[in-house]
Amino acid sequence: MAPDDSDGRDVTIFAPAPILTVTVEERPAGDEIHVHAGGQGVWQARMLLRLGTSVTMCCVLSGETGVVLRHLLEDEGIAVRAVERAGRGAAYLHDRRSGERRLVAEEAGDPLGRHELDELYGLVLGSAPDSRVTILSGPADLASLPPDTYRRLAADLRAAGATVAADLSQARLAAAVEGGLAVLKVSDEELRRDGLAGESVEAIVAAMHELRARGAAVVIVTRAGEPLLLLDEEGVLEVTPPRMEVADHRGAGDSLFAGVVSGLARGETIRDAVVLGAAAGALNVTRHGLGSGDAEAVARLRRSVTTRRIGQDGADHPVSGRVSPEGLAALATGGIPLPARRPSAGGEPRR
Image 1 (cartoon, one colour):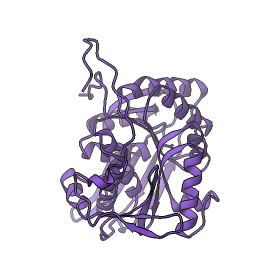
Image 2 (image 1 turned 120 degrees about the vertical axis):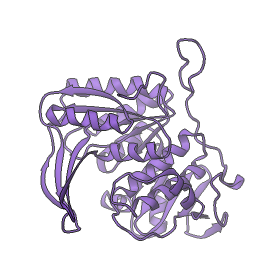
Image 3 (image 1 turned 90 degrees about the vertical axis):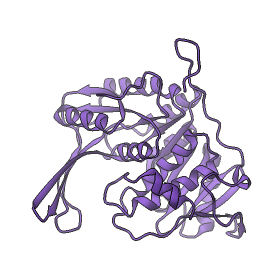
Image 4 (image 1 turned 180 degrees about the horizontal axis):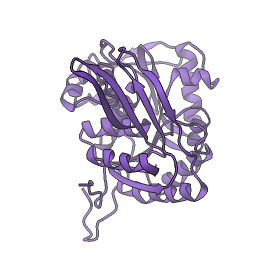
């Protein structure tokens, strides 16, 4: 049965083109084939659900793959609001029998037409006011969606009172920031690729200040193998998750971002929420399933996340030893205001 989102969900995700993923793995009894929904928005949604946060996904479902994707998404507990169309949907086939991912076949899917994009845009605007946070995620195919869509959508959602968070790169990052974001997550690699930052912490922090000046209220930068950085109105925070043995690094950033959004949706400050995100990302690298994990394990890892303040010049200012699951009062530095859900037909606020 499809999840009921008549009373709104904690988080709305704009996920233009989910991907049908088929993976072949070797088992003692023979080959094993797995079929799942995938793509950035799906991996974010999966971790949000693991953390007890309900999700509505607004997407386009195309052709045969779209029919399968709807069932897979709803079976996971995601409320789906979709534009359905004929044509080719995004899909890939991976062979992992050697222990490594090998791409066998990939289908990018048909680009979105103007009418389909307009309809999808309306679905997001209709769902977001009933949610605590709205995520803008990107399609796997960079050519399938005009970047300016993200500027318009961020601006319109913000005007409607939504709290908008995004994990984007390249032209879509710039467009969403111009529209205005409550939270932006980006990797240092993406900042360097886009010519926004150099290698040093000082250069990354300078780029974060520039992004904040352009329209992102909070900027989170992940650094592979290094502590992540957060910039908010109080300054820069360095967040260090526990080091884990890596089974698969793919999807760790999506899990981290989902953890941050989950924390915000439950009313945590951004500095508490980023600690939850760091724990979720750390857990993800120990698993082969993208966006996978469980809330109890994340809660345990959260106790091992450490933070410290750093200045523009890279100097550090200790904040706390370890951050408890409840967060320290010293980190409660003015959380991001979340929109109240619209009242239900009976006049009572939706819970």
